[in-house]
Image (cartoon, rainbow over the protein chains, first blue to last red):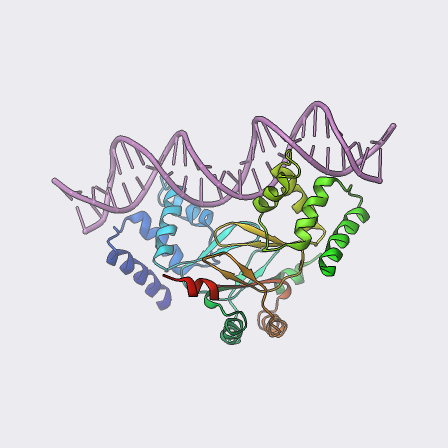
Length: 147
Length: 147
DNA sequence: TTTGCTGCAAATAGTTTGCAGAGAC
DNA sequence: GTCTCTGCAAACTATTTGCAGCAAA
């Protein structure tokens, strides 16, 4: 919990430092992004906020995500089906494990990745800045439930 | 070269086996996908074919890619900016290294990935079916060219 | 001859943008 | 009071679909 409070404050502070105003709508969006429970989509965020702010517009969600992304405080997860989901709790690249049935996303611990990055850099002569690693499969729950 | 000829023939055979007709437009698309030089986008494929088939439609490219994808003979690479590129030469998941300046895509050799997959499966209790691993960076050429 | 394929145009989905008024500072 | 932000609607981009004619088998 403390972590999430920190994430909220960190993002708000960064917005302030860069001369952005803190509106109620923006705070609501940051609140959800800071927690990022279940790695929400734009639509998820919009739906959650609409009950508190009936006039909330999808465009506002999009604009704020673009802004926060530009500050490096949210990670965009783009999926093969074209959908995007967001993680403002861990805004740095990290592996994901995605259940293709229930769409649940889990963050595994993997320490072999740094080494792999070096291996790739050496082999290809690239300067590696970023990466993306996703595993797709079926989670324990969905396997148990199968008819 | 022999490999690419094989890929072309494999895809055409698979289409035939599944009761699909072999039209000149379809052959042209498969030819490009089988080689997948530079991991072409839909637009790339369309542009390349249009000189031979002036009436070629983007919809036809899309429809054929969906079809060939459903046969498991082309890999779709979705990128953070929303663009898609395709690899019909190596239609199974494999890592990519992408230059963010010149958009070049390189296929590195990485053997530690299988082990990582097992590690993830054990840790998360998922049955892993698929994965995606991309590294983003700057290639040797673009680094040398930097102003 | 049959059935699937193509080309065109229209439809759709997700995201972005212009503008006028509202609100944070 | 200034200047950014919001909400709305329209614009835009990438992709998909309906339909009529065409062509592979």
